[in-house]
Image 1 (tube, rainbow, N blue to C red):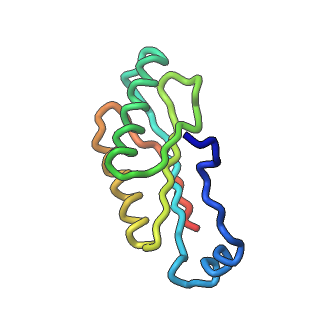
Image 2 (cartoon, helix red, strand yellow):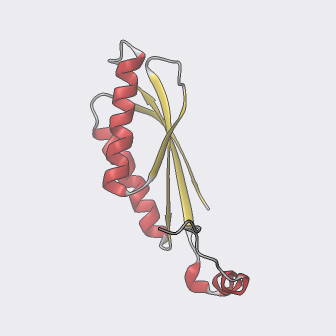
Image 3 (spheres, rainbow, N blue to C red):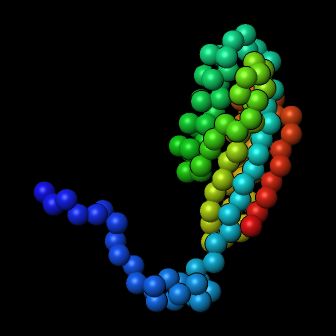
Length: 118
């Protein structure tokens, strides 16, 4: 077994070629979703509900998900969902499906959402 690096060496000219190639433009979408979790009686219950939602989003839509707010509040949470796509329409559709999945979860109520697409 060799002890070399697992990272490939990339020539700087290859990176410049990617930047100049219009076929390699991507959009990044981030949605922040604030949740109210009315049935929670403990932080353990809250963690379970939020983790379940995060896992389902990752598995179903291949998005990045993190809990980003209200960590010490029992019945509130905020999660951020991010995705990258070459197709802006597909990116928007994915974020809409994320909203729909969360809204179908009877344990939580969506109180506010914020979206940014770059």
